[in-house]
Image (cartoon, rainbow, N blue to C red; front, top):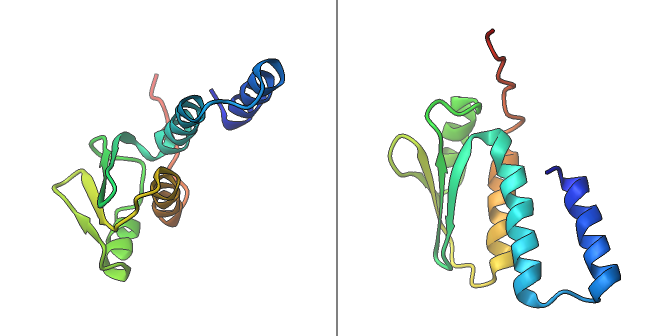
Length: 118
């Protein structure tokens, strides 16, 4: 489901049922984040208030030098094994944590397009 499809679904839900309860809005926000992270090869995001961990699939479609540059420029971002980035930042608000994930991924540039071999 693309971001514009999520927007259309959200608009239809609000039209039909009114303002969403916080739990439903959180569900929509989580799905929106999942759609954004998929092209980067992200398989899991753990976003606790003090630490966010982003787990990538093996050989993600991200330029390795972009990850190294990100870590060198940001003391609060570290590698956690071969396939994880650990962000140590106190962010009690779930929306702020989601925004941090978006910002970190966008700073990695555009994911490489994987070509399927027939």
